[in-house]
Image (tube, rainbow, N blue to C red; front, side, top):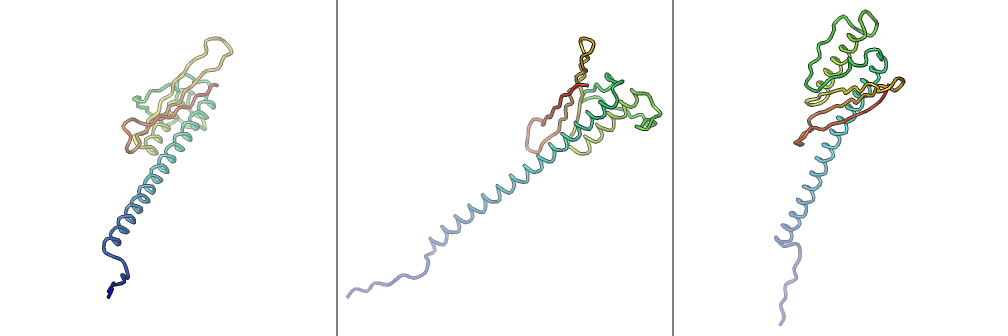
Length: 155
C-alpha cells in the first residue's frame, strides 16, 4: 500500500526565501527614494544658483557706468555701503559694492557654503562690449569638490 502524504501549505524555506526577495525589493525602493530626494535638492540648488547669477547680471546691466567695480573673487569680503540703495543717494561704485555685498550675502544664505565671483574683461577696442563671467559655487552633500555654475554675458 502506497501511503503518500499530500503536502499542503508552504514550507519554512519557501517563506524565508519570499521574505528575502521582499526585503531586497524594499531596499531597492528605499534607495530610489533617497536618490530622488538628493536629485531634488540638487535641482533646487542649481535653480537658486541660476536665479542669483541672473539677478547679478541684471544689476550689472542696470549700472553700466561702474563696470570694473563689479569684479570680485570668491575670497573677497564685501562691505556694504549702508546709505546706498537703488533709489539714489550714492555714486555708481557704491551701488556696485552694495549689489555685490547683498548678492554674496544671499549666496551664503541660500546655498550651502555659497560663494560667488565676477570676472570683468574690458573691451580691447572702442565699441566692443565689456564681458562678464559670473561664477557661483557651493558645497553639495556627498561631493568632494564644490559644484560650480557659470554664466557669461556682455554689456
